[in-house]
Length: 372
Image (tube, rainbow, N blue to C red; front, side, top):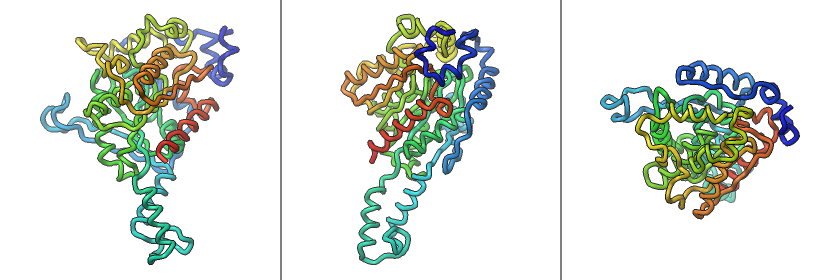
C-alpha cells in the first residue's frame, strides 16, 4: 500500500491504484518514443473522459504570416488550428445584443419586436449597454511537456470551462517538439492571441476581456504570453487560469516537491521532465530565457490577475507556488489554490474527481464575477 494513501483524495487514489500500489509511473523514453507516446496519451485520455457537449464548437485555421520558420516566402505552411467553444449563455447574449441594438422588444418587454419610445424600448437600451461589450474570451493551451497533447484530448475540459466561465474558449493546437522546438509554440500562442483579439466580436466575445489558461506546459505558455502582452509584443491579457505549470522559479534539483514526488512513484517523474526539456530546447537555447522560464523575469509587475492551481503530490508544486508568491510580491492580484490529495494532471479527469469539477465551477464563478 502506498504510504500516502490516507491523505490522497479517495477518488484519485482509486483511479490510480494499480500504479500507486504497483510499478509506479516511471517510464523512461527518448525522442524516438514520441510518436507512440502521443497516440497512447490520446487513447488513455479517451478511455477515462466522457464527451462534453457545449452549445457550439467549430475549428478555425489561421494562416501563418510569411517569414516564419518553414514559411519564409509564400505563407503556405500548415495553418494554426484552433477550436472555438461557444456556450449557450454567450450565444443567447449575442442574440440579445443584436436585438437590443436594433431597438426591438416583445410584449413582455424583452428584445424581439419593434418598439417605440416606451418603457420596453428603454429596457432594450439598458440591456444593450450591459451586454454590448461581449463575453470573456479564454485562450487555452493544453499540457503535454511541449512534445505531446492535443486539442482533442482536452476537448471535455475546454467545453466545461466555456460553460463554467460563460466565456468563449479558444483551444490552440500549437506546434510540438521535436518537429518544432522552442520557440514555435510561443510564436503560435502570439499568433492565436492576435487572431482572437481581432475576431473576438464575431463569436460574441470582447477582445478587452482576453484571458489565457492552460495545464502543465500550457500554463507555462500562458504565463509567457502574459509577459509578452505586458511588453507590447502580444495582445494584453486580462486574466490567467494556470493549472500546475512549470515556470522556472525553482530548479528541479532544488525542489523539495520534485525530490519527494518526482522519483517515479507519482505522475510526472523528474527524468521524464528532463527528457522533455531536452527535446523542447534546441542547441544553443537559453533555459533562462523568460519565454522558457517566465518566473525568472526581472520585472513581474503589471501582470494580469491570476488563479494559480497546484497539486499536493505534484513534483511541480513548489515551482508553481513560488511563481504565485513572486507575482504577488510584485503587486499582482493572485489567488493560489493548492489541491490537497491530488497529483499532476488531475484537472483533465474532472469527470472522475468531483473536487476537480468543483474547482472548475469555482474558477468559473470567479471569472463571471470579475467580468460582470
